[in-house]
Image (tube, rainbow, N blue to C red):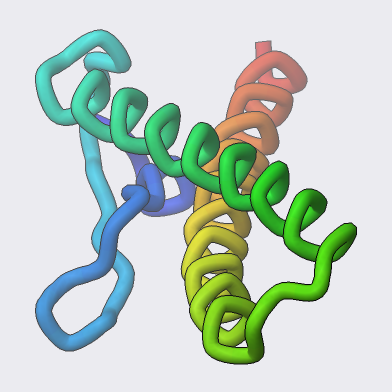
Length: 101
């Protein structure tokens, strides 16, 4: 089983908005694959929103449309930062594993 510093931060939060973590030795297990797929969708959504923002900023978009875009970009940025944090922690634990060997 993984040690506490090797817990994977999952790309979603619990009902109270608290982070969820996964402890497993199987990076190819169901929950790991589910998390990988959700991360991929989240990053794809962020990319699409960035493209939309680029297009909207080149036009005179309505304030309500800009507000909705800003709201969606905020959520996408939150998700993207969670993915980056999770992946960074996993990289750190791998580099620590290599140094111990």
